[in-house]
Amino acid sequence: MKLRIQHHTTYRYTWPVLYSIQHVRLTPQQDDKQRIVDWKIRTPAKHHSACDHHGNSVQTFSVNQQHRELTVQSYGHVEIDPLDDGYVPLQPLSLNPLVYTPTTPLTRFSDEMREFASFVTDKHIPFTHRILTLAHAVADRVVYTKGSTTVADSAMQAFENGQGVCQDHSHVMLACLRAHGIPARYVSGYFFNPNVEQHDSHAWVEVFDEKRQQWLGVDATHKSLVQGNHCRLAVAKDFTGASPIRGIRTGGGQETLDVQVSIERVG
Image 1: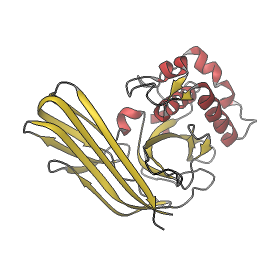
Image 2 (image 1 turned 60 degrees about the horizontal axis):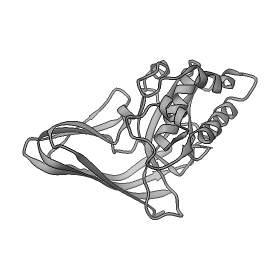
Image 3 (image 1 turned 180 degrees about the vertical axis):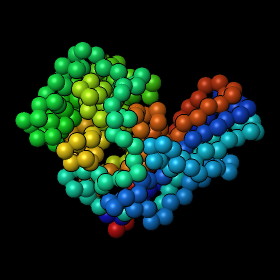
Image 4 (image 1 turned 30 degrees about the horizontal axis):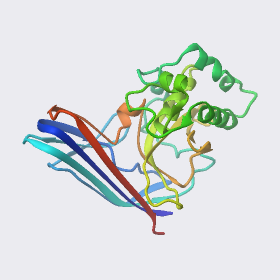
């Protein structure tokens, strides 16, 4: 499947920003199942491209002039093939999976969460079935509710409140899995739904299958394995390291964010 993707992000500020530096992770991953046909990123200043320690493509730029608005655009075409039972192709240069076992401030867990996911260590149950069962349980426990959380809310907060979005589903999944020593990582990207015109950024998780020595993609929000409708952008320990755009600024006052994502199948 070939997709045309456009992602438009604009920050607006109540007061002039004196200086800002931003890190952009909006370049799709490339492997045997996902290939970039063409891709461009437009930033308000010249950007420098590099690869972070998770293997993500990162574009960094700084704006040294006063500004009240900042816009980043990314667009292009990506070819995506369905994964084999949800498993991501082998990536020989990736980090040791154990890097994704310790908790982070956003993925800390409670005793209740550890007990909630206690079945994930039962090796009498097939690995994929265990992880999918957890995804269903998380989606049922944390009801998808737009606007119910912010990017600063943790897995424990979402679990206790019982509401959240895809980011929260992913953080709760990570917390529950890491509570039992199972390596799992956060994935940012897109989910193509042919039945809607306006799309959003999306998030899911990849869980390391020790027996197969591969990462299994699981989307708790959709209660499914990751297949040909998912486009991977970045992986990290949590949202902080995989955020599409993240940076710091001096000045600016209050900030408003406008994000528009469109995805269209073209082949």
